[in-house]
Length: 326
Image 1 (cartoon, rainbow, N blue to C red):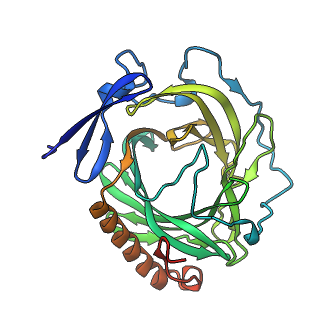
Image 2: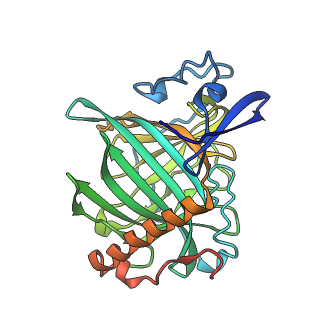
């Protein structure tokens, strides 16, 4: 039960939205923002790719499974003048923003509750010569933490957001089982594009990062544009749907739905994706300064472990610093 709620009223897209501030987190209420008649507002569909959007028909790409010739993107560290100011329309990453997703995955045919909490910290880290924003991702399966990850992003002068590396810790029954880190510039890993400044149907896919040492070869391309989708937080128009895939899992595609000025609001799948992961954005907002301080501490604790566990990769990087220290 939430205690000491502060209720604030504001208008969102011409409708009254109730915002609760609790435990240091700004939470958009489900009932006020998603719409009473929204078919997608209350449950995660089995496959969001099959949801009827209503209104105009979404434009959809014709896609294949072929791997483009270009394995990784051309990266130029000199093209990052204000790399930690990430204001890309589809993937804005402002320090202190927290995104919470609920949904399901499948394991051996069984439906498992999933929850993902992503927070943009106020830390930066120099990777391959570029100051990068540090994100803390926490993944839960059936209420148990199964992965904690530090992820690093930077925006170039053209507005493209780059994925600079990741340090994930994977757990089983509370015990660390793997930490397949990759950092651009180390062990032949290359930075990739997380989101272009402008994306169009029919464009070739692009690398989201290239790290053969840990078999990270994710790619992305536009799957649909002008989509409408509803999640518990709100209903969104002009949504961009990207499909992500890897040569390590041929025929499997993860779909990510991006709302303008918000970011990722839904995750779905198509093809041979065995996990059948579906997620909806259920909370989004700026955390309090006190909560951000706590999250910073958690991220630094994870980094401290990373230096010991991943000496050959993460151990070759400089320490993360507070935003503005660069």
